[in-house]
Image 1 (cartoon, rainbow, N blue to C red):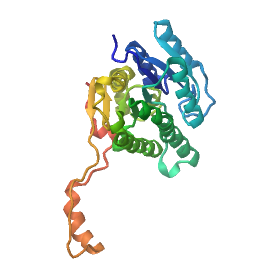
Image 2 (cartoon, rainbow, N blue to C red; image 1 turned 45 degrees about the horizontal axis):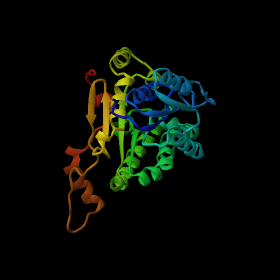
Image 3 (cartoon, rainbow, N blue to C red; image 1 turned 120 degrees about the horizontal axis):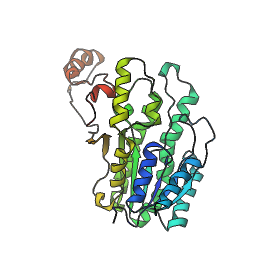
Length: 305
């Protein structure tokens, strides 16, 4: 018996990395799986291939599980609608969507091209819209549905050279929050995961010095994609029906619950603020509560557990 017996799940980006490990675990836990992967490069520059998705689906079937493959792009809304229909046609329904599909096109913001900005936003933010919008009405009608979406500490905390990626990932956090709020009465829930894992995305990060090399080696050995998959699968389960609108991180064997923006401090001037008073009084008083320019590595400086 698995925690997802009888469930049908669509997993995007299921041909590699976190998506692949999640697809395999979904099946081991009893789910019927639609494995989607465009089969493209990390930057999304090529046309892709049906091979990776079908290879994962075949692995599941060979192990006695139920899976079909799909190689359409999450950026195409009509194609995503077809993924939902494929799940219904092949397995009789759809109960959860896990959406780790993504690309990277890193670069300093002052040098970033429109195409690199648009490409990342299209895959991550538009792609997340597509997979949720194409399935939300079904989930509401059956009063049962779970979304496991993917954010990043590049957005939650920040990483230099990833403005496009960070913007998209913070957009996903806002989208997930509203889906969870609007879906609560219909038993539709949405959570997001900020993964720490050795994938081809992480492998693409330039190593510029010995300190960076040592950090990458620690990540490679101690933060695996299959560890992220454990939480992604758990959040699809009926046992997690009371878990929604949360932001989690997975870092090796550590699961992190992130806070969400709430007021830290406020000040009022009953006579009304002026720019001068704000500069002389308000901002200096709040300064001790300002957030610094820490990057993700500064917030998580310790070795993975």
